[in-house]
Structure formats: structure tokens, C-alpha cells
Length: 587
Image 1 (tube, one colour):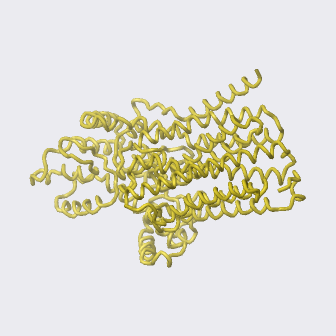
Image 2 (cartoon, one colour; image 1 turned 180 degrees about the vertical axis):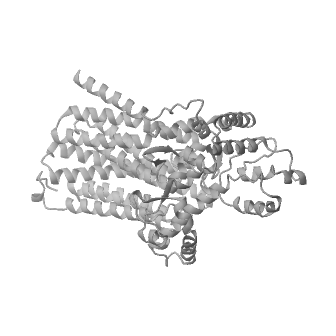
């Protein structure tokens, strides 16, 4: 009965935790309907999405956050974007440009401050210095660039991206006629870059267009010259909407907003099909909430494991399942919204590896009933760490971007990529158990004969699955390559990384089966598998060589190195003499 009560409390807590913040705050009739504006469609980087998603992604790129703090109050990403594209004066004072490098701050004459965020108004007078520094950095080869050059380029890219975004929402309809030609030429150049296309296809145009170009076509001079037909009502309404917001005319903004929404829905009923669901998905924030609960699962499980108490272990399992369900929902939601299988890029691989690791932890708890919460420990820490990795990977912008044509093959994405990623997961799970085996044996007296045997069995079984999945996934990758490029194997760094995982898992099983290593040696080798897998997952992407040379960042290289050092430290601890281990375990 006590167990039922505790688990019920855990479930109710999880339900409360996940629903918190999902419901939109009510906006009265005499307020700007900013949330409704966030539901409007836009096409950017090849994908149709709500403005809410565009705003969140854009703000994340600039600031690494999805909201802005102004005088202690939170401003949503949608309101921040609306303030900017409507041209409200206060928008220039939002501190959203994150500049962390001290040398860059010094060269721009900016003072260091907490959180390292600066406004457009602060940076604008320094544009000459920023432009000169970035041009100098771009003129150098990649090998010649130092940290300052790379940080200057990063800041300049953010600043110019912001300017391009704002230009895409200009209203040239009242511009003097003598400025039309240079403006039209500037817009044509701007459209070569990736800018938001906010006006959907309609009777006057068969393609998505940026607001600036659609409104330019509505200019009286353009109409007089007969180059275009009647003014586009969608573009006119969007322009009126932004002007009303800028001038503080609430009623006109709200009326025009709903009129515009009705026009879009009448012309493109399919456009709104997924938009409301995506805004809900954005508000739900399942991944970060699940990550927080997974960390709590790990802490509770540590206490239950060390104290040998089933109550905390049972509660941790219930909490892990409660976090796993929204995690699963969010992955399915991404598949629905993107139209692709679960794994398409580094971000999605992180959330999928985390999901599969938690599932493995639940299975371990079910299969090894005497494991005293080891499945909780593995699932909790793996789920937390992988979702934390995903959170930092999201800083590049839209995590559901359009696939490159060469990779846009749903069959192979659903077979090769999923299987290889599950191979990563299984190898990481075995390595994580190995880390716990060494840490528990070295630092506690908790490991007895039964615990020792259970942990080794879990490692062995997981490595068997890792070998199977990584081998099948690698072969499927060769078949995909043969189908696409006419060659089964090309020694691409990613192919080599996948092969290394297969070879290492095979070595583990042979070493164990041939009695070349004991329990502790097997755990040490499993931990080494973490290094091999991390190299295949992230390391080869940093080489800038081959088909998989995407996602290079200085921070990824740094954290990969930190991870490798921690795993080497665990391996060293595993090789210490038995007399140093508190458990006194022999190899």
C-alpha cells in the first residue's frame, strides 16, 4: 500500500511538473494578440513553421535563450520579434547579442557585463570596427585564424543575420519613386540569402515571398508602370498589421491579424494543418523538463542504491517512466512536424540516444530485479546528459531543418541511421554500467558478490546488443552508399568510426569469452567503448573531411576532449590495485 501511495504521488508530481507553463496566458480584447500572431505561417530554410518557432530559433541563435528579460520581466520570443520587425524604438535596446570573448568586447569598446548580452543600439555605432575585424578574419585561411578571429566572425554573422531579418520585413510602399530601382536591386540581392518568407502562395503568386518584395510590388509607381497586377491583399494586411502594432493601435492590429489569418487559411488551408500543434510543442518543452526529472531520478536512485532501500528505487523508476512518456511524445511530435524519421542530425541523435538509453534502463530494471536500481542509475544519468547535449546543440537554430538532397531518403534514415544510433546507445549504456562498476567498487563497500555478478551480466548482455546493432547498422550504411553513389565502402571518417565501434565490441566479447580479462577488466574495456563511440558520434564531424563533416564547433571539440579525459580517469581508476578499492574486488 505504501508503495502505491508513493508512486501515485510521484505520478501526480510529474503531471503537475509537465503541465506547468503549457497553457498560454490569456490576452484580453484590449491587448495585442501576440500569441495569435505567433501562430501565423512563415517559410524559412525550406520549412514551413509558425512565427513562434521562427522567433524562438532566431533568438536562440543570437542569445542562447528563448526569451528576453526586460526590467525583471520575461518577454516572449514572439513579442521580441514582433517589436523588432514592426520597428518599435524599444526593440533596439533589447540585450540579445551574446558576446563572450573579452578581446572582441574590448575591440568594440563594450564593457564586460553579467550574462554577456548587448543590444543592437550598443553595437550599431561600432559597426565599422566590427566590419573591419570580420573582413580581416575572413581574409585569412582557416589555419591562420585564431580564437579572436573566430569569435569576431561569430559576432559579425549574428549582427548581419539580424539586419537581414529586419530588412525582410521593411515596408517600401511609401518610398519615393527615385529610390525604387536601388531598393529593388537590394531586395534581389537579399533574397539570395536565407530570409523569412512570410507571404504564402495565393492567387497573385505561386511561391512564398518576403514581405519587403510583396509590398514593393504594391508601390503605386510599380502599379502605374503595369509591371504587376492588383495589390496583394495578404501583403497589404501584413503591412497594416505591423504599422498598427508600431503605432499602438490595438483594435486595428487585432482586426487585421484575424483578417490576415482568414485570408491565409482560405488560400492555403493545408498551411495551418500543423502550426497550432507546433506552437503547443514549443510551449510544452518536453526535453528540458524530462532532463530535469532524469537528474532527479539519478539522485534518488543513488540514495536508494547506497542505502539498499527499495522504496526510493521504486519511486525513481516511476518517475523515470513519467519522464520517458513525454520524451517519447516529443520525438513522435518531431517526426510528425518534420515528416522525417527520428534521427536526421546531431540534435535529434542526442535526444534519440537519450530516449533509447532510458528505455534500456527501464528494461534493465524489469529483467534484473536484483540489480538494486542500476537501470534507474543508467537511464537517469544517460537521459539527463544526452538531453543536456541536445540543449546546447539547439543553439544553431531550427533543429528540424530541411534535409540535404543527398541524405533525403526516408527508408535509409529509418533503417541505417536508427540502427547505428541504437548501436551508439547500447555501447554507451554498457560503458555507463562500467563507470558505475568502477566507481562503486573503488569508493564504496556496497558491491558484494551478487551485485558484482549482476552488473557484469548487464554489461555483457548490453555489449552483445551493441555489437549486433552497430554491425547491422554499418552494413545498412554500406548498402545506402552503394544505392546512392555506387560504392559500398569509401573509408569516409564516419564509416571508419562506425567500424571502430563494431571492432571494439567484438574485442570486448572475445576478451571476455576467452577469459583474457576478468570482471574488472571487462568494465574497463566497456568504459573505453565510451571513448570510441563519442569519437564516432562527434569526433569525426570535427575533422572537416568527408560527407559527415557537418556540425563543427570549437565548443564541441572542447567538450569532447573533456569527456575523453574523464573516461581515461575512470579507466585509470579501474586499473588501480585491489587493495586501493574499498570493496576489495579482485580483477
